[in-house]
Amino acid sequence: MTRPAHPSLPPAKFGIVDLFAGPGGLDIAATIMEGEDVASIGVEWDDPTRATRDAAGLLTTEIKDVAALGPCHPSVVEATVLTGGPPCQSFSVAGSRKGHKALDDVLSLATRLADHEDFASFEAEWKAVKAETDLMSDERTGFVLQPLRWIMEAKLKRGRPYDVVVLEQVPTVLPVWKHYVEILKRTGYAAEAHVLHSEDFGVPQARRRAVLIAQFDPGNEHRKVRFPEPTHQRYKKGAERLTATDDSHDGSLFPTTPGGGAVEPWVSMGDALKATRPDEFVMVSNYGSGGDPKNRGLRTSDEPAPTITGKVRRNRLYLLKGETGAKEVGEELDRLSFEEAGLLQSFPAAYPWRSTDVAQQIGNAIPPRLSLHILSMALLREKPKKDWYCQLKGWKPEGLSPVEGQGDNS
Image (tube, rainbow, N blue to C red; front, side):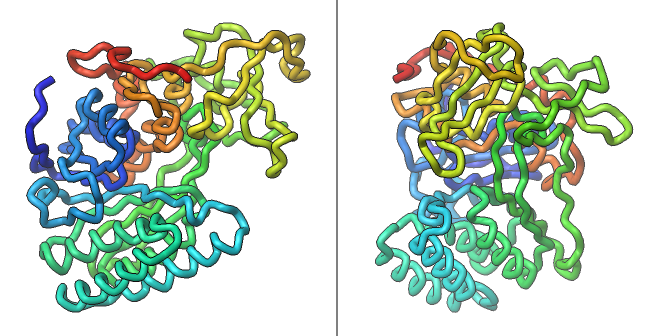
């Protein structure tokens, strides 16, 4: 595939610039939606992750640093939509003093970036805020302010606000998104933020994401913003899996929602991995339950996977003995391959993972299937088309072998 020397976003009704884009969980969903005049370009710092994006044929800006770019740069100036999932490690230590302090700092700094009437005023305040974040013990704390900087610069400097903003991260970032909602409402946006469960949307994994959707609509800032509605059963430990209400499928691994508002059963690991793991199995998570590493979580193959992280290769798999409910383990099986880990994130089987940190790339990504639901509702204000799921499952990179240059499974 011939790549432009200096990639830039082509004009589109829904031209997306995706900050902290990762391997393409959102961007691959955008390519599925291209028939709706959707295009995307990602900004990504990490070279191995950029290699994966390039192999997948996804546009990525030549400039790697989100902080070194802005809405007026020629590569992204055509964007009408801003998306992003800034790193959040400084907030992620649940209940820690440092995590709470970082959260409080960001909320205070974000307030200082709000309500500016001209770019000169905003620019002066941003320089002061940036100087403070540069001095923080964890420089990543300031990354979560970058989307707000882009939003304000698009309005005050470019003179053309983003029509839609979509931000996502782990649930600990929800207070930041809620704070942004109030700022964006004063900036002309109708906005809301909620936590979404990935298995609610047919992803074979229990994963929660804090999602903000904002739509520029001056004068109607306090209207309701529609979020995607669940299509599948939510996973709860000990809950019984629903019986499918419809024998028809959308051509993917995932059953579609039948009429009448019912939801389908959750999609299990066994559903997603049936091509490579036809026998029932048990997954023993690398992470302990309730924070205790000795209390490893167990999931059977008729349940969704636990959250896929960068340490997914440490999860152990065993043949399931006896009845499913007993969760008795037999012989140990091979650990998840990158392809299998990607499938549990709802990536296509043919996704061309590159380099040696593939597990981290997969763990950091937003599930493409969830992205389809979020983007469809944020941009089109309707649920995804059924054939998009088929396209996502069957997607293949143009002219490239899915294993070409792939890192090993270590």
